[in-house]
Length: 216
Image (cartoon, rainbow, N blue to C red; front, side, top):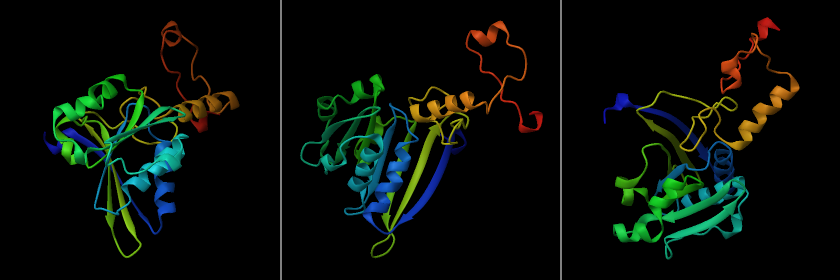
């Protein structure tokens, strides 16, 4: 696929402790919806599992239960949005291994956030719409974290509340339930208003327009 067919947003962060890495991951968790696949690539000790621990903390899962899944391939953790699935693809050798963890079902159901370590092992079956996280050693105690929102073949669309790129599983306007509720709260506060009289199409699913500040 040509590069012009890909819409990507890249964020780069630097951390100097595991706690900072967890905080970045926790902040990212607020911006993803169920159905999103997050890949984690990096050398041993770069902080991949630490990043997943931060995702778990932000999603309301038991962060203390997060460990490298090397020997079991997959762990499932209940969280506020449904399920966090932590997969170590390093040991996956065949389609039978993928079938054993219900990979196709996880993608089809769209109710889990899936974090995949060593994603290059299963690159052929990764969804085109996903978040790629790369962790690198950038000094003795420094890590560089690159977060890439990959959305091939679609126009750039961001969450109406926080501005994050919309991931797989979003409703087309908000990246998460939190952002949807935050937007609703703005309506309750009177931050938005209807710019024209309601029409029949609006009541059947249209989205009211925001009124510019200059019109208030």
